[in-house]
Image (tube, rainbow, N blue to C red; front, top):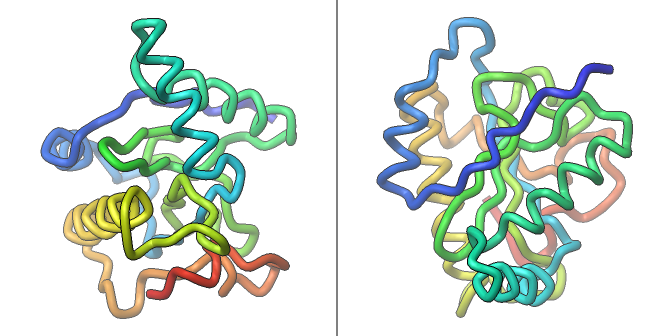
Length: 175
């Protein structure tokens, strides 16, 4: 399979809105948004490399994004999820106007959003977990507006996919 090159760019929410609104979805228009959590890396694992990137004068998070690209390629996939959401920025991974790989039943129709956390163990109501969840909600709203997705029917949890066998995005997240 040919790998879809990743965007490899992090945005704060206002710039992310501009980026998403600039995209042409005429070749692929998703009708669903699927929420995931990375489980690995956890918030703590991401933060550790995030701080190391800062010390090396790199974009915070770039080392982990590069590692995730290597991982997804090693799975033999043609792409990965579309977004990775952290406390201060959202990383664009697979271009949002191209099919991603993240949920077996819905890859062909869905945008995949990965929250950088393990919400089966980490708190989504306080601290970094809450910031991640809030940024995911904001990103979801931007995508719903751009793509005309009804948020009451068009947002799914990965674990709702009948071909999924694990509790993603964790027991601490609900639609």
